[in-house]
Image (cartoon, one colour):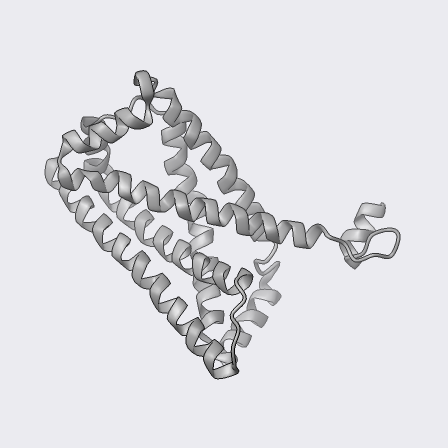
Length: 227
């Protein structure tokens, strides 16, 4: 009962403000950062196909010492757990019902604020990733040893799915990293200086993700040509 009261009032039984929302926010930020870094590594990994199948296979052998392919299965399982923690901590910020959804939509239309719109895109892409990314990660968790032939076969059959997954993931991750910087990094200076710095950070952030996205699309074309 006390936990229910604390959840409703946002205060602990001794009258102090609950730390649970702050801890959930911290968990969401940390898991989001880990997943964003993993996504960059993943794009680099799959992008090695630009240098040929031998380069791709060399990276696989490096990641699976001694040919123990279960290492990849285990890493995928860890990423899946982190992904689930991130998803569940983020869900608390989603509109809880249709009335909340309409209220936010009206607010977004009236405000016409870029960051508010970006959050809306992050909400939509996050919802899609809960299904798309989960399906992809599960195939790796329970999959067999990764080889160029296996990857080529998968991409030939599911290239549309992988392209959509790439677009949704990069959109979500790029917005997420920008929001993480805005949330946790202090930007000093006058109002004009702070605004200029935020704009610069936003530009650099999306350029970096855009470059990785473009390279991944080129790599996807190469994967498809090998099928």
